[in-house]
Amino acid sequence: MALPLMRKATAVWLVENTSLTFSQIANFCGLHELEVSGIADGEVASGIRGMDPITSNQLTEQEIKRCESDPNSKLELIINPATIGETKRRGPRYTPLSKRQDKPAAIAWLVKFYPDFPDSQIIKLVGTTKPTIKAIRERSHWNITNIVPTDPVLLGLCKQVELDSAIKKIDKKNSSNNSTENLTKKENLLASDNKNISSSSLEKNDLNKEEIIKNAESLFEKNENS
Image 1 (cartoon, one colour):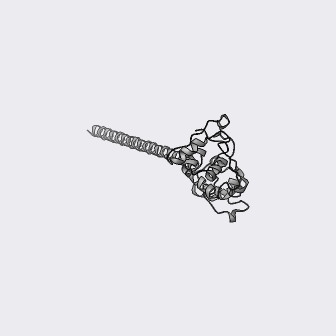
Image 2: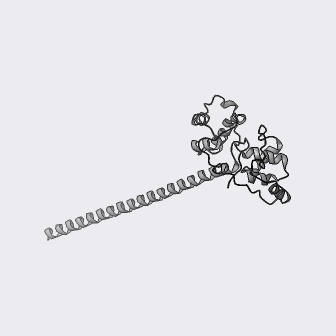
Image 3: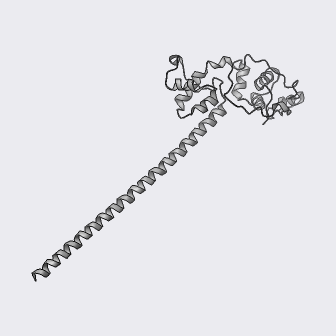
């Protein structure tokens, strides 16, 4: 789905200048509904100046009025060539200066509740570096005593959808590893059972041989005595 340019700035403008619902604005701007609620409360994007999507040729006034009259309808973006591919992001996530001090708290939360998260996944979610993650994992961070683990979604460092997707990947990987381990254990048990059966068979064969030899010797002695 194509998204508008400067999504948060567009969301700020829509919150301030329209009667659209949070859900409609969130859907149009590709944001979580809680983010839009935070914008309305002044907790999110407080330093961002709103951008008019009408003057930037991304929405029409008629489209906004249509959705204002019907809360269940969705805003339709006028496809702007500049917006194509905007959802693709390479490299670490950009984090505003005002939120960078919250990164250690978010990392500590992820490490505490999801210790199986690889560093690459934490970097993708929070936009940090491997040395910082390592320092927090090993509790050698310079400010470790003051770091309070906090949900990165509440801090606005990532979306709930992104966190849920990362958790699902880890759960899927863990379940796959567990099934492989269980299969290996079963194979080992079968192998050990087969080994025990074969060894017991060999022991029986050895006993039969000893009995045959004893019987032959006793017969031979009887023949000599007679």
